[in-house]
Image (cartoon, rainbow, N blue to C red; front, side, top):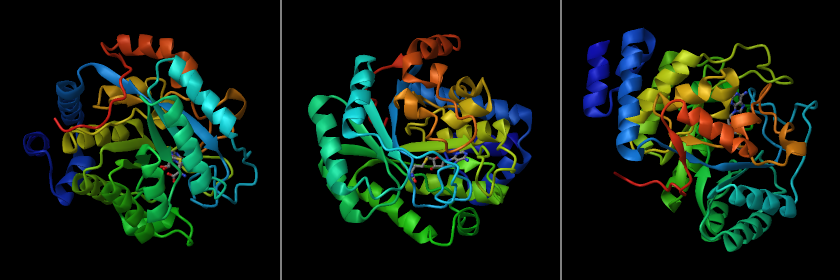
Length: 346
Ligand code: SAH
């Protein structure tokens, strides 16, 4: 195993079957080695700074029916909300005053967030805070829509590919969703020039080691600027409510491998990992992650963006908790880096 791991470190990539072997047979020494190398790779580029992004969950209505997600349209127990434009701007203001210079506007897929409305919001944020970056995470949209939003000043977009393995993609999504369309959306975002984030869950029902290996190869092939990886966490009111959560060890292994495959990428220590384990955020950083996304959603709505059970949104996972986050990072020798932290090639 060590030999394969050393080859990955040396060459920055492996074949899909080799990723498979590494994922299936990684012993704890090899895992430690890969995490150490991933941390070294991240530190060479980013030092001991961790970028922060203010996450604003602007709405929980969703027309999709993803089998794993608590926001799915058939989950009638889910509470739905939409923030007003004033609330969104007030959240940005609160974040700006805390020092945040990236705002991530995320919602379920919801036609309410039309191009016209979103362009107005993006422009307003950029006008108020010209030195801040706006990241969108609104799901699948047309080429024209992505283009218009980009022209209005959104420079980053998060759209996880969810599964590079087509059979798995189809197992975890409803029939009205299309693997091909998802991949087209990812490629559109990359070609328009967005700093694009893709990624997947670890441990979702039906995911094999082969599927994960395909995800890693897909990431190596597309070379996105950002990669979001977190464990699957069961969500009440979904078909996967009784499925087991993804495991911590595999998530950290995948994070470390991905850091080595896309060394310059911005990789968050995801909320899902912080939800799975109280040590999740620190362990992710100690596996090569370099971004944290504190939650800025107004507290009255925060619990309603419930993509899975018991989602962490308080303490170091919240924007009000930046001090707590700073202390947590200090305990492992890191600190918050308040810069915009745009992607660059080193
Ligand atoms: N509608 C947007 C935002 C979705 S929420 C979009 O399509 O991009 C962001 C991510 O949360 C999803 O891409 C998915 O990978 C993740 N997610 C959804 N349900 C989850 C669950 N039960 N456990 C862990 N992650 C989940």
